[in-house]
Image (tube, rainbow, N blue to C red; front, side):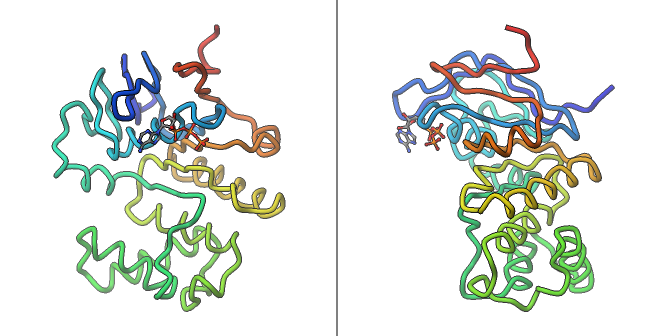
Length: 227
Ligand SMILES: Nc1ncnc2c1ncn2[C@@H]1O[C@H](COP(=O)(O)OP(=O)(O)OP(=O)(O)O)[C@@H](O)[C@H]1O
């Protein structure tokens, strides 16, 4: 049986007192690639933020990478984050240090102490994203596509079962977007990582079709569930 990485049951998502999404139900299995689409302001980021613990779960139940989100103590959020990879549109790399130091910073911050293992891990993730020889580069010396690869390398550091990506191709030209999509699908296939990717980019979706969750009129519609 396939392993469930995300399970969301009867969830209502709020921003302040506003109900953004109602009665949300879906499961995501290991190795699945799922798009999250929907018009601007319909709740894609709110859903992702709920999954990575930035927006507390108020109603319903959800389990993400083995963590029960209902009533989760905020002190547990860093542990949840260590079991997830999060990729952003604007990369969010530390601009004052090189690629190697960016990755090292995350490992140190998540409890890694053994220098040999740290070196091995950094080389491993840079290799996975095709940047093995670029560790010495500063973010400002890299193209948008290369910076997005570093962001993905960073997401892979703690070998997550799930990557949440918020418009990872939003700042990239079509050719570079294509390369990033190939990399994300490869990661799914090779390591069994589940990926949820919020996007407005229908060129990308048409080229790399997969299951879709769509936010619409306060609901989440699932292409895997017939209407
Ligand atoms: N921090 C916040 N405080 C209050 N309301 C918010 C906050 N963030 C988002 N909202 C509101 O929640 C609703 C959903 O926003 P959200 O950012 O989740 O949508 P989205 O589908 O991700 O949009 P986009 O495609 O533009 O990123 C919107 O009405 C938005 O104005």
